[in-house]
Each structure stands twice: as C-alpha cells, then as structure tokens.
Image 1 (tube, each protein chain N blue to C red):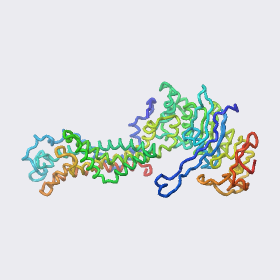
Image 2: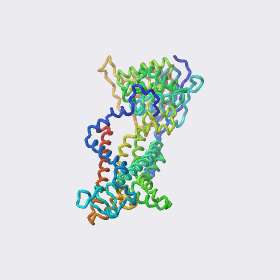
Image 3: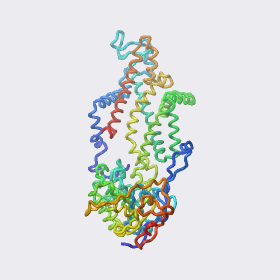
Image 4: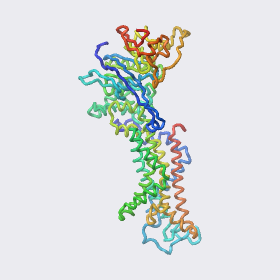
Length: 313
Length: 320
C-alpha cells in the first residue's frame, strides 16, 4: 500500500502498535511476557556468543585435551572457566551451547523465511487463480505432507549433499538443511494463504478493484496478502519452533550439521555417546537449552494465536 | 429528464453458470454436467440521466445482471452496449456494492481506497492532484477531507457506503451500477444515502442501474422498473404505472407484500410457495406453479415480453 498522505495527525505504525489490542493482550499475559523475555535472552546470548563465551569452540588450537570431560563447576573436579564442564575434546559446553544455539536459530529463521516465501507465493497463486493450477499445487503439497517430515528432510538433505561438489559440501550443509526443512513446511503456509485468498478474492473490495483494472499481481500483493497475514504470522511463529526441532532431529540423526560446526542437535548427538560413561553434562545442558528455546517460542506462538483470533477476544 | 439517449442497452443477455461437481466426482458418480441459467434472454435500455431499477426476490438473477453489466462476469450470450460519454469515449461504468463491511479493504486508509481508481487508471498526473481530488470527493459525499487518513473500521455503515460512493465517483463514471446499496443499512441511514445518490444524479448527470428487493426504495429512486423472476424479466414499466397498476401476477404479489400504513390489518391474500430452484425451472412460464391465473398454455409455452401500453411491457399469457 503506498500511502503518500501527509503524516500530520496520522499515527505512525509504532504508535498504532502501542495502542493496539495485541500489545494490550501481550502485557496482560504473564506467560507471554515471560516467554518473550526468555526468548530474547536466549537469542541475545546466542548472537553475542563470540563476546560472551569463554572459548571459541571452532578454534581447534584453543582446545586442550587435558581439559577433556571436566564436570560442571559446582561438582568436584570442575574448573574455571568451564562453567558447565567440557566434552571429550576439551571443548567448553557453555560456549558450544551459545554457538550451537546461534546456528539453530539461524537455520530456524532461514527455513521459516524460505518456506514463507514459497508458501505465500504458491498459496496466493493457487487461491487466486483456482482451477488446475490450484489442483496441481495442492496435490503436490498433499504428497509432501503424506511422507513423514523427518523422512522428507533426510531424503532431501542426503540426496542434495551427494550432488553438491565436495568443495561446497561443508559450507552448503546449512543451506541444504534449510532447503530440506522448507521443502516440507511451505505446504502449511500455502494452505493457509490459499484458504484465506479464496475467501478474500470473492469479497466486494476485490471486485471494486477489478473494476478499475488492477492487474492480478498488484491485486494479490496489495489487497489480498495483507488480509491473510494474521494466521500466517501465528503459523510462522509456531513453525519456527518446529523448524528448530526438525533441524535438531536431523543433526541428531547425523544428516544435519557436522561436529565441527555443531548446532544444538549435533551437541546432543555427540553428548549422547558419553551419557553412559558418566559425562551426563555433555548431553544434558544442550538439551535443556533446546527445550527452553522451543518452549518459549511455542508459548509465544500460542499466545499470539489467541490474541489474533477474533473469536476468543 | 428523458433525453432518449441510451446510456446502456442490453440485448438478449443470457448467463449460465457451470455448477457441476468436480471432474472426478462426476466420473465416479456418473453425473452429467450441471448448468444454471441465472439470467436468461433479458433486454432493456437505460436512458441517460435516468434510473432503471431491477427488482425481484433473492436468487432471481438481479445481482448477476449488475455484475454482467460491469464486466465482472463474462456474458454467455447476448450483448451489452454503452452509449457515448464525455469527450466521445465509451461511458465509464462503476459499481456500488451491497455490503459496506466487505467492500472496503480493512487494511487500507480511506484516502488510498478512494485514490485507487485514480492511480490505477492514471486520471491525474501528480500525486498532489490525486490528493486534492480525494479531498474533493470526500466532501462531495458529505464526509470531511481529514477522513482520508482514517481506516474503514472507524466509520459507521452509512459512512462506509459514502466512502464506497466516493470511490465509485473517483473514476468519473457516467453510469453507476448499484447492487442493493442500502439493504445493509438501517432505515434512517438508507434515506440519507438515497438522498445523496439523487443529489449526485442531479449534480453530475449520472445514470443509475439500481438493483434492489426493496420496493419502497425503488419507488423513491427510479424512473423505470423491471421485475425479474427466475432469471427473466416478467414486467417492465414506468415506475408510477407499476405501482398504481401492476399487470403481471408476480408484480401484484410483490406489491401486496408492502405494508400499508393506512390499513395495517388488511387481509393479505396468502399466495403459497417460494421461487422454484433455478437448477430445475418449471416448464413454460416459470411463475405458473404459484400463479392464481395459470392456464394450460402457461405450463407449456414460455410467454414473451409484450407491449401492453407505451410504458408497460408484460410477459404473461393471462394478461396480454
């Protein structure tokens, strides 16, 4: 929407947000505020990892083998600066978690962004044009959804990795993961957008716009898309948590991030092997971090779903 | 007022909709394709500066006519032709919609909604001129120029309908198709909107094609009326002729439903039935199952629209 009206007396977007029901509902939901604070903390610490963490886990030269498998600091044998202990190669668990969280969040955001882009685009086209385009796109989506998520992702990431030239294999891993997750989750957005588009395109404001000859592309993006965004916003938040989990699952199964670029899932996989040798901290703390992250995102998503649902107001 | 120049002439207009089940269902259940004839073979002319109304029950195809005239639907057969407008170009058509809550995009500011036709059709060169035009239009329909900065949800139903009218006027049309513009409003607001529309008709020389089921509204607004039943025009008259001496039994039935203030306890002759399904219309005259005058010929032959007098045409075997 191109608003070229003078900004006198007009509320800015920010002012409208502070006045809105959504902000009011957020303030009165303790769980939502709590989840937001926790999520903000997790994200900020993850992105400040290079500053905050005592050790750079990617720097092999900084690792000392005699620091291997140190327990957390409050247990006999724990050492500064390894607050949460170290793994078998002498890597600081806390640093690993901070860097790993960063990777998990980046992959989560990237896969949500990619699947939003694809899902919104295809959903708009399917809903707006209908007919055989709609049928073809939605049947493709049905087929994708009928295969278990993790299987699709494993398939995609292992096949694509085979086709990547070896030089790119390491660097392209994150991109392949994002692709594998997005491959599955765009369907959900496409369905939501399609359903909403089919409702909106029959509304009279769309007809009024058609009467003045608005081209289809502008109709879809300026008129229909803004009216489908509310459910998409909720789905995207909930799917962000899901994407992090899928990534962790894939990494845990060994088709995700490699051990030298560990995400939370990789840390859990590596730590899992030492669980029975008594080094429980290697697996426990990354798992807790993953739980906190996903629970916070989901609580925020649940609140958002209620706050934006006009029937529950 | 009658300058006798047609602004719109519709000739043998027919629209059928394909309402068949999806291909796969049809194949499995061996059902044929299904078509509904929403509008069948109707003709009328609207003269410049007049208001032509189409009345009828819901489902009789009057909104379809409106959408065919504006070009939102493709015609199946027949043609729609427009007269010449300002500067010799074909007449521009715009539409006012029924539901003021869905006819304005809730995410757009009112100023942008009204400016959309101007921007899309490139009627003004500069953005400031567009803004001036928006302000002028808002004042024309009785709103304030500052309202351009508000969102539709800040307005009442009547005010939204004014915005809708302003948007329709933005493209400088000569013919306005009004699809039940007041039926979603309460009575006091209806009168304001209708008076606004009449004022605009006088000031701008507009021609209206007015669709309604509300006979008192139609009487207030129009010069000529067509009564539709199941996709066909059954009676076409000048407004006073229809209201004083309705000819077709269906027109009589419609007029009998208007409450009479002088005689609230009058006996209304109950005429049973409701309109038949357009999927399976009755043979001959579509009205014969409900008609008190039905004869044998009514069941077999579809009546044609015939002149009764200069101002009245009726499609009925019993009357003409």
